[in-house]
Length: 122
Image 1 (tube, rainbow, N blue to C red):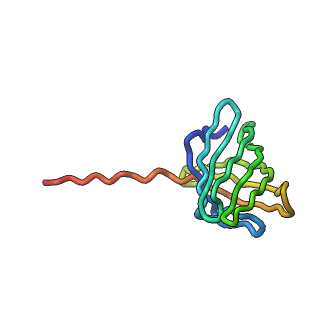
Image 2: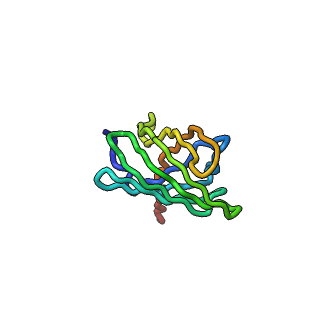
Image 3: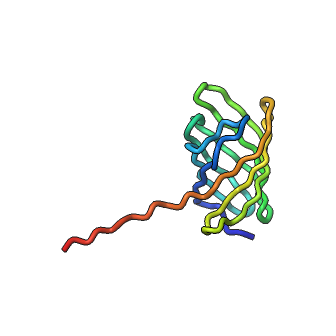
């Protein structure tokens, strides 16, 4: 099993045809004892939440979000966690809206924290 998602930030690799999340959206994940949750925002999304469970490297959750047009939407998702060649984590997602028509696949990848540059003064 791959490591916990707790405290990690993820960003989409693109925008799905019937989705609203795009590369400007950021997901902040939390995880404890097989439970996962996240808040997300950015791009078309004003505010979003997801909540669900993790068994091994599979996540199952429901999501709800508010977009820039003031519309709320909800759906369900199953995601498979993997590790990229550079060591970051990736979630490959299969999702479906519950509040409207549409479904799709997408992926989010871990964003590593920016390194602080140190300057030496001589």
